[in-house]
Image (cartoon, rainbow, N blue to C red; front, side, top):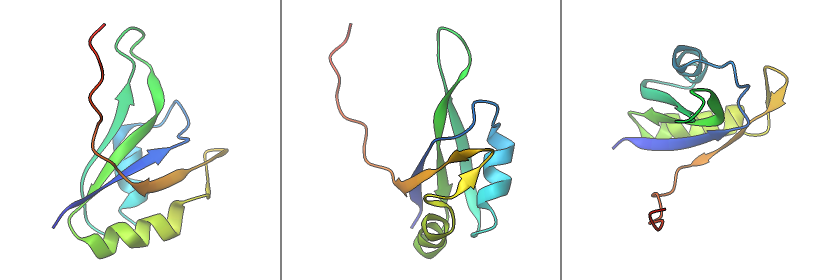
Amino acid sequence: MAKKLYVGGLPYSTTDNELKETFSQAGVVSSATIIMDRMTGRSKGFGFVEFESDSDAEKAIEMWNGKDFGGRNLTVNEARPMEERPRR
């Protein structure tokens, strides 16, 4: 079963491809997405990586959580479901 990871603390210049290539060191990545700000079109400094297997996802957490990436320390953990927010 696929497992989705939250990756925070990314440099704002990181691309989806760089994220995918980096996390591919831990296993097969099905998708990697950097979250962009709608108003400015710039990265928000976090994203999500989805692995095909749970064991690869666990390996990625061990490999990258707290590690330096582009001069910033990453936070890598299992993604939680998005919470309902009131509409503005």
